[in-house]
Amino acid sequence: LHLCHHNLESIQTNNYDSSKAKHNLLLEVYMAAKYEGNSIETYYTRYQDTNQGTASQLCTVLARSFADIGDIVRGRDLFYGNTHESTQRKQLEKKLKTIFKKIYKDVTTNGKKSAEAKDRYKDTTNFYELREDWWTANRATIWEAITCHVVSGKYFRPTCIDEQGGAQAKNKCRCENKSGANADDEVPTYFDYVPQYLR
Image: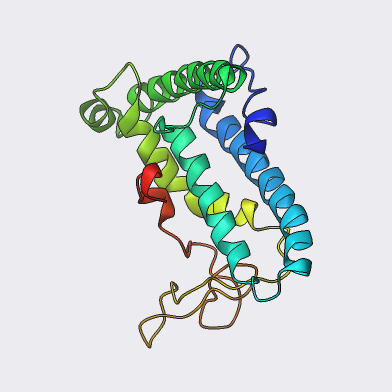
């Protein structure tokens, strides 16, 4: 994945204070997704030119990459690749644990819901529950980032919610709301909830 050599691999954890960790992480993941989407669209467009009828596949390729980002953030990534890639992934996982430890400290010590957060987030080694909640809270923004360079693109089947029961994501691989504008809170894929070995 391109993203592993971009923003996520270069995350600096020593300057994160716990109150800013969640915002800094979102920015890093957002930028990694943006560059990943741009890279995919650039190379995929060349492929589309020589393989007519594959326009709907761009959204699927982006959805799979989006799901891979989700797996990395949530600590579920199964692919470690070659030795060099494996070393980078281990370093990235260590950095993510450091960042989520700081986020954990912030959510369990600050605010009205800190006792509730302590009760919910019992895993203080890998922070899986916290990571899952972080991903759920930010997945729409990350989908927007990975699709921001897409000029057009339709998803292969109806996945957007509408009055008729389902509509196709056809504008930059995004769902539209009733007024025809992008529904920024709706991600037209659930690949990020499908186990990696089944995608």
